[in-house]
Length: 415
Image (cartoon, rainbow, N blue to C red):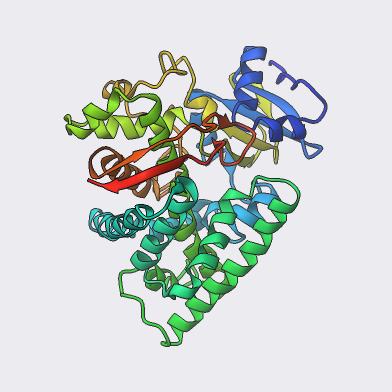
């Protein structure tokens, strides 16, 4: 039996924070292995990368999610008590709640609302000297998803609610004050959503019957009881926050169009299936979330390696999306590659892998793809704009990674 190779230093926390997207794959390549062991926060952890490692990671008989994510992420990005930390039948039952919101009809409804918000936004941008696309997208998506979810959102509250919601994903992976801001924002958003749940149950507000707010407020867990208000609040945030976070991917849509202007003609011409290929390549090529965590249920052996019981394991998402064993020329942006992609749920993991119903793959993936395709259509056919000189290099130490300038636009006009 082979011993799992050791990482490059006693504790790798600072190295991971400094390069969160490339840390795991870089050391796997250096060691010539799909996994290595290190310490993160002084605790032993196994880091894995690649499609075979992903297939192992999503074997729910060997791994569980309860208690796997670091507390700093639970208290900011994910919240505590939500579906991401459940296992087995409890997870499948709660996950079905989210899957019922992801029908074709519901996705089309979101796109209809977001189209109106895009129009409102671009009309406002036309009167502005310049805009930072990333922060402007927060409000567009926040307005759209709250209307779609049946959440009351007064005009005077929009700025504060949007800033707090964005802080859950924009500051969660930071250190120092920005991370503390994310924790404070989590408390405020939790309080807001818990109030919505209690008002819905008390009949003081009445979201549409099939809306996310209504469905989550009246969802009953396996014990037949309504979710505690603070848990229902976390799950409602798990609809709102990821949708606003699509702003990251939409910035990368604009970035890809700038760096590859030759693709504009194909997209604007509506070539058969090309927009789908383009959006999927954006999700593969650009960094979004670096890794996901689980814990081993029991000791087991895999490919000659022994995994001890209770060990925290991190699966590298970005590195798996760039694994040369799956993707030829992985560091090049080539949308056409998705015409030949085999559709595996273990070699393409922008928002997790495995099955949507039984594994912890993000149920909002269809939202993400639909909103990105809508943005690609808007950028290539609906508006014109200028991108002035700025620092568009990707900041790899930032979570989420973004162009350093946030992607500034000027002279925005509707076509």
